[in-house]
Length: 224
Image (tube, rainbow, N blue to C red; front, side, top):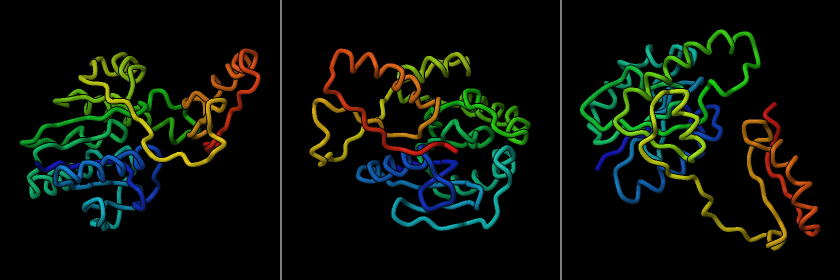
């Protein structure tokens, strides 16, 4: 089986955050069972390859709000040439809004741009285009995957389409630090509202009242 992962970010291919890290883990895991092709379009260019060998194909990349249309012909050519059985797109970036082919079109949901606060005038001006590309990407999917039941509920409301399956994210790596035990809670993620850090800190007083020995450990950085 051949699976292409089309993503707006990927480790070592320009700016990469949660989506890039997740696609990297997913690509390595899937490569044990299938042929994997990574296609990523970021602010620093377009890259293509397999999980262990990514190289830049295009030196320049248009602004994010223009990429789905501007790169549609290039993406389709690359995918048709490789002949995948499945192509998975992220809703974020909307790269699957225009591209179509003889493959199963899968969309894996991340936080919709509608839930991201607009931090600058330029970001605010581009939001309608981002939302349009996201909406088209999701609506054209043959299969939609959500990473939590909460995400499934949110995206059902925003995209007016219910995800087909929920596959939760989970940490499966080792935890060797002896400090992490039954009296400790570990939070890993960016310290921002949409990650729920404010809810966690507010609730922690209640946790400590019931379990005075509990300790909260935060690992991450401010989104600024």
